[in-house]
Length: 106
Image (tube, rainbow, N blue to C red):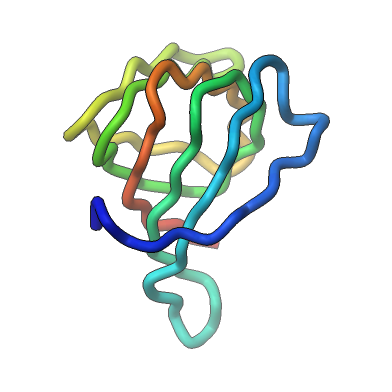
């Protein structure tokens, strides 16, 4: 997975708070009904906002702080597992290019 070829996933400019973060990713598996997705996602340093899906992910490399609106600040790094809930509004401060393996339930 560290060497997986990822594809560009352009951010909406309204999501970028600071820096020039670049997002890439790759879907590795999708259920026949499209409601379960597994893949790899990567973001370079910067600060961005997002509205989350139901997601479980494990950080493969890099470091970030994820601030959940009206919730905790999650400091994540290699080996950390995290669960985000659908509708969570987040602010990602990416300190080192972050790569994660994820499972999303739609």
